[in-house]
Length: 53
Image (cartoon, rainbow, N blue to C red; front, side):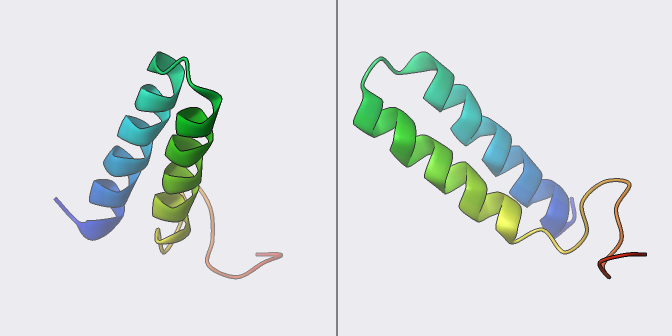
């Protein structure tokens, strides 16, 4: 598995945990972690590295 796929899976797991928790603070923490993982992805699926490409 390449790193981008690993990061996507980690982000998806954080989002899943955010959906499961009832605590608003925990939910925000999980969503922040998901955003961080997504920020590590070099190229989003179907996207480009350069803005405007």
